[in-house]
Length: 129
Image (cartoon, rainbow, N blue to C red; front, side, top):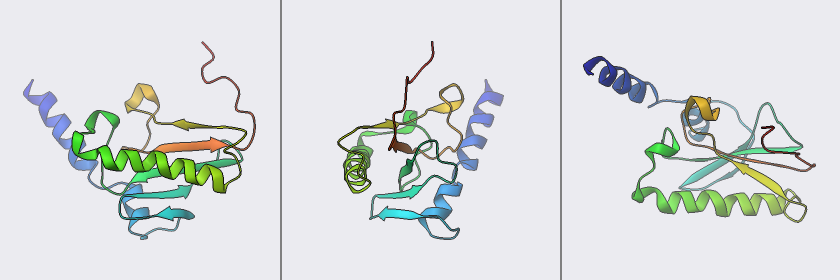
C-alpha cells in the first residue's frame, strides 16, 4: 500500500506543471482565443474537426476526479465560455460537441482538466460500440 501511495504522490507532483500551465502563462506559443481570470481557451494543435478549441481552468485540476465544490464557479465558466465560443465560431446553431476525458481509460493525455469544443461539420457517432 505504501508504494501505491508514493506513486500517487509522485504523479500529483509531476502534474503540478503541464504544457497547459505554460500556455496559460504565455511561456509557449498557442492560438489563444479567450482568456480571463478563471479560464483560458486555445485552438488545438491537432484539430479533430473544423473547429477544435480546448477550454481549460487556469487553476491546475489534474482530472475530473480532482474537482471540488470550490471549483464550481470555474467549471461553470468552462461551459459559458464554450457557448460563447461556439457562437463566435458560427457552430452554435448546427451543433457541436463538448468532451472531457478522465484518466487513461477515458483517453486523457494531458493531466490538466480540459474541455474540447469540436464542431463545424457533422461529427458522427460518439462511440462505435
